[in-house]
Each structure stands twice: as structure tokens, then as C-alpha cells.
Length: 494
Ligand code: AMP
Ligand code: ZN
Image 1: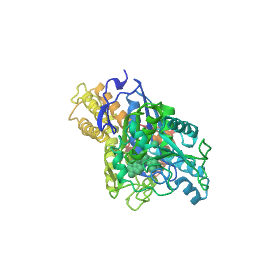
Image 2: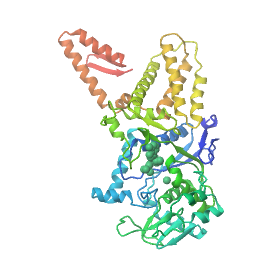
Image 3: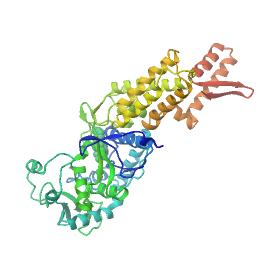
Image 4: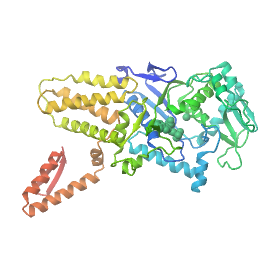
């Protein structure tokens, strides 16, 4: 029986502002769309936090036995500087600055995004569509919205008529903003604007002469508005109504609000059942952002090459640090917090390794089944990873007590304990035992051990038995056994 049939998962829905029992539209399949990066610079750790939060969600849904179609786009056109609405296209700006083609910029930073996510051991999404690959679909949606009467064309650009839409639907229901308030809060339109109202947003923009990325359309040679790409790609791959839509909190308004309006105006249906928003990673108490320069890059953390760091930290430790906070809480980045996470994670892995060498008894003092369910309960409560990690640490203490012979565990409980730890540490949290991972490809660890075997042989030749024994014993302590035979010395991992 699939695990999801035994577990009740609750998800905090930003639209209703309540935790709701998760029921996918199709019983065993989940459709999830997450807004991807705008690829004009290296992703910073704040961006990574959001994508890693959704990696955890993706992994847990899969772990529960759902078939998940996870769509995460690449924004390679249309996202202008001011909430996508006006100003320059940052991709074009960067292309000019670096004297590259806009598509070279897109490629460069898409590769950076992919390598960064891979270094965090994040799973790739099922589909990763690009805005520029879906111009035809976007034009189709604009035509429908115009024919439904919720958009108008002016001088080759097309705008969504927020006021007209709000007569029939509710604009602002996700962000909780009222149109009346938006009207009083918006400054007067500049004389050049073609919009009927400042709240209207662009569906299509006529390209100015310097705008290189442009496509023909019924209205002008131009480019789509930013919000439209996500409506086009989510509908195309997940249908007019799908289960989960996610992104960072800062995308709630206007981006996601506009997505809802576009979908309702073109399909008359509410597109998403569960809206999920992740909270921000901060640095010095302020949001990490590309634009302000208040950010840290993952590569700086892995190399230690940043003045706020006392040493390098691995991707797994960085991720563990982030999962020690719930995805809806603000999290502040600091060197001390990373040091504490490193200590904690090593303790957890040590316990996991100790468990492999523990001998089972005929009795059990520890109720593994109950503890295992408490791990699921944590994740079922809106993917509460800090509570889950707390549960994993509870068992570290138990494992040490078993090792010391203070409490007993029988064979089936021992197996279940091992399996549960493995499932949550490696499959659900997607953390890595880096030594083990490196051993899989054979190279680095093997070379180091071979060198130690050579040094041990040298020590033996020199009759330095103290040294040769020390090498053998300490390797054994680390779980690496040397086996002396006729053909020389081989090694095995315990
Ligand atoms: P962008 O490339 O700017 O569209 O951002 C990609 C994703 O990163 C979006 O979902 C943003 O909400 C998210 N994001 C940006 N800054 C932060 C931050 N400081 N903490 C967490 N998520 C962020
Ligand atoms: Zn989006």
C-alpha cells in the first residue's frame, strides 16, 4: 500500500491562510509548478533556499508514493526591472555589459543554476520549460483574454484590464490587497503610459528599437509580459487546474496575483488548489537580494572565500542549516549557525554509522514504530523539517544508549530504525554522506587509502611496527579494514 494512504499530509495554503488536508486532483498524481530563476546572474543562497524548500517538498511527496510532475521554469525573457512591468530587461542589460548575446547570458546563468542545484543534491524537475520556448502559447492566452473582454491593445502593447476583471472576479485575493487601496496607493501615471489604469499589467509589450529579444505577434513585434509565461507553461504541462503552485513570498504580489487573474480570465477557473510560499533568507537581518548586493553565493560558502566565513562549508551542511528552519520562517545566515549545523550533522551521521555495527538483542526497550510515525507527523504538518530533525536527534541519544548497553533493541526494530534514518536523512532531506558518495565513484578515497597502505608497508620495512599498527587500527576505527594476503594488502569498508 502506498504510504500516502496511511499518512495525512497538511499543507499551509497561502490563498486560504490555513493548513488544509492535501488531496490531489488525481488520486496518485501530483502536479506542482514552481517559479524558476530569472537567469541574468549567479543564484545566491536566498534563491537556493526557496528551490531547496521545494526540493524537500518534491522529495517528500515522492517518498509518500505520489507520482509527481514537477514543473519549474527558466525565465529567459520578459522579466523587466520593476516587478516585471517597466524599466530594462536585466538579461539585455547584462548582455550589453558583458558584450554577449542575450542567449549567451541565459545559457551561462542557467548552467550556473543547474550546477549549483546539483551540488546541493537537489533533484531536477520533471520539466524545465523556458519562457522563450512558449511564445506561441502566450500569444494564444492573450488572444483568449482579449476576446473575453479583460485585456486591451494600445500602440502595439496589450494590457490586462484589472478593473474590468475585478467587476467579475476578485483581484488581490492571494495577497489580501484590495483594488481600492491599490488605487489610492499608486502614484499618478506618467503621461507616456498607455495603460488605462496604473494597476493594469502588461501581457505583451511592443519592442523598443534597442530591445533585441523580440517576436512577431498580432499586435506588434515585441515580447510577452513576465506574469504570462507561468500561466502559459503551468497550463500547458499541468492543465487548467493543478495541485500546487509555489515560489518565494516576494512573488505573491504582483506575480502570482496576476497569474491567478490571467488564468481565471482565460479559463474561468481557479488555477491552483494549494499556493505555497517560502520565506526569505536574510543576511545581516536584511533580505538576501541580487539587486542590493546583500547576498552570499553558494560557491563562496563551498570555498570559504568570503570575509564573514571562518572556513569553507559543504553543500550538505549548508542545506542542513537551512532545513533546521521551517520553510515559512525567516532564516538569518551566519557563520556561527553554520558551525553549529556542522557539529549537529556530524553527530547525526556518526550515530547512523554506529547503528550499522550495533548487535541486536532479543528484546526492545525502544518503540521504533512510534518514533518513526512521529517523523512522519512532523513532515505531515506542512513539511516541518526542524521538528523532523529534532526527532532524528532524539534517536541519536537512543543509539548511543544502545551502544553503551543501557537499552536494548531487537532485530526487526533495529532494521526499522536503520531504514527510517536512511529514508529521512538521505531520501527525504536529500543530505549526503560525502565520504560514502565519493567512494561510489571509487577514486579519491581509494587513492588516499592506497597511499596509507604504501606508507604502512614502508613502516613495516623499517620495522616501525608502532606506526604500521597505528595506521591499520585507526583505519579500522574509521570503518576501513585492511586485509593482508599473498598478493599484498587490500581494503574493505565496514
Ligand atoms: P528570481 O530569480 O529573482 O525570480 O528569484 C528566484 C526565486 O528565489 C524566487 O522564488 C524568489 O522568491 C526567491 N528568492 C529571492 N530572494 C530570496 C531570499 N532572500 N530568500 C529566499 N528566497 C528568495
Ligand atoms: Zn512565475
